[in-house]
Amino acid sequence: MSCFRILTSLALLLAFFDLKAAANEESLKNTGMGSKEFTALFNDMPFPLSDGNCSDSELIYPSAEKYYYLSSPNYPEQYYNNINCRWWIFSEYPENIVTLQVVDLDLEVGYDFVEIYDEMGRHTELTGSTFSEKPIIGLVYLYINFITDSSKAGRGFKFQYQMIPTPQCGDTEYLVAHSSYNSITSLNYPDQYYFDLYCTWSIQSSYSAYVVEIFIDDMELPSGGDFLVFYDGNSWNYKQIPYSMESGTYVHSTASNMFIQFTSDPGHTGTGRGFQLLYKSVLSPIYNDPSLGSSEDPCTSGITINVDPYTYTEVSSPNYPTSYFNDLSCTWYIDISYSGFGYEIQVNDVRLGQGDVVSLYGGSNSTSPVATIDYDTDYFGRLFVNPEQTRITFLSDNASTDRGFLFLVRAVPIEPACANTGEYLSLYGDPVSFASPNYPNGYYSNIECTWTIRSFWGSLIMLTVLDLDINYDYVYIYDGDSSSYSQLASFRGNTYVSPLYSTAYYMYIVFDTQTHGSSYAGIGFQFQYSAKP
Image (cartoon, rainbow, N blue to C red):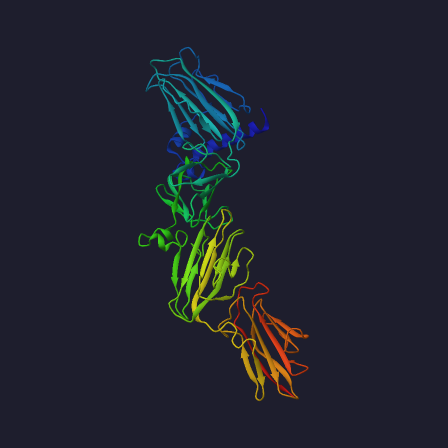
């Protein structure tokens, strides 16, 4: 006998005596075997392992993946009366399990029995000639007890058994949820699942604006080291979804993906029958309000938002700040009832998946966006647009998602795009100030404004920056009355040199918000010019 088998036999004997000493139920539970029947089994187990005519009773250690047979004494002739035979068939835990198949059965019904127990005390009783063709499984071992009375006898039983590798789940199973339920079960359900499992499923809803719903149809997971975890996304990197580990309850994702992970303890602390989950795709609760018609869904037919002066209205991606859904096509139309007003759109938060994009439209061109926001956008600022054809569109693909976006929209007065642009700003006395259009409420995109400052005879021009916030746009200052003269400076963002001095009687200033493709406005600028003798 190998060292492994000797050690296993010694461990079995020690376990037997320990269990005999453990008189109360709680002690047995601590062994992982907690069962009244199993307690009775051990309390009624004298050694040697058999009595009567059971000379073949023994501790059995089958080799892997070979078939063996076990039969009642004298099989196929009549077995003996008044015998009590016991066999233990061990696996090489945890790499292998024992499976047993009934080949033949002929016992006196109700008086002669074969009782089969696994390591958890789960009990299969055989009598008469009726049996299931489904194998009986022992994760660590199977204990077989054959008991006969003093009257009639049959030909007995014949079992086929073998040791096989413990089944595993393999790679992640990818599933698509539709409008009707489909099922997921633990390995070997409804019989006991195996030790040392790692099983994963990734479920995606087949409809945009729909989430994944799980109905826990049946669940038995003994407390300890076995866990069934739901994640609110397409991998275990997303947050866990809390749930009640009870049959008849529901679990929902907040977006169109759910990831499920099941692990069982590599130690034999016990398993159960596992679980059966039903999954399908259901409309997200944020679109499932009976008081809202389809016109209130920006991702079905679009939604019109009325904005007021100076009061911000929120526009956000579906499900914000939780992950939005795949395959969305959403439109928000911005409407205002006040003449002489345009729109300020504040980009307050944005996190998009790669391939997803938000487009902002405004002005006379209804086909080309004045700004686009995508996966690489990391700037939060403001955009000012004229009221014609103003809308926000959002497109998501079928890949990764993120928390989405939050915009704040309000109406602001429209000033001429370039007030007094192209005109001379004459200097004859005290310092004079001028500013970008709509300062300090933000300028409009896609404009170019120019100013020419002219000093009186005998004085140069000193230009002082009082305020500057123009993000990615530019201000150019030239030492003359046009851009053909040498450049004194160029400003961008909030970086500048001040003051600046002309070398003659003119200074030419250009404010450009269109050449460099910027879409996000700052508050603008305010300059002051004065004479320098």
